[in-house]
Image 1 (tube, protein in one colour):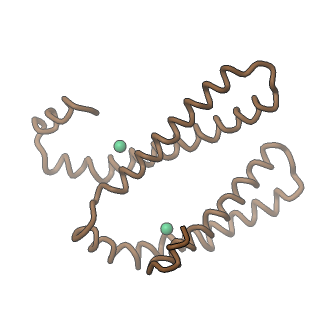
Image 2 (image 1 turned 30 degrees about the horizontal axis):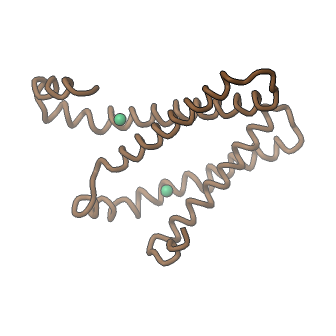
Length: 166
Ligand SMILES: [Fe+2]
Ligand SMILES: [Fe+2]
């Protein structure tokens, strides 16, 4: 998105891109470890720990101390407090769709070991991602949303909601 350069948040978005590419390097190191390609694995593992402690954790701390307070105020005035959860849902649904397509392709394979291997890797990665995203998503709902429900809604009101979806 080239227009991001004009946005006041451009530097934060760029930093996210940088963190994501380093996170991808961590994953590549773990992939090599799994394949038994031990050449640069030890160095990669050390770099990964350093990256988490020196960059990823401080990024989260910086956000909590500096970015979230003003964003919290902006959300109250202009935003939707549940929008981030809907973003999670989109991420989950996208991976479910991908999983379904990969399963269909996998089941129609016959004797093509290279494709089989690639699809297997995709399915494994997708399943791991889904488990991580869904479990984090449920934690957010159970730790943040449902205590509000318990404090401020009656059992009868909740029962009515459950008539729809749960
Ligand atoms: Fe961030
Ligand atoms: Fe949800």
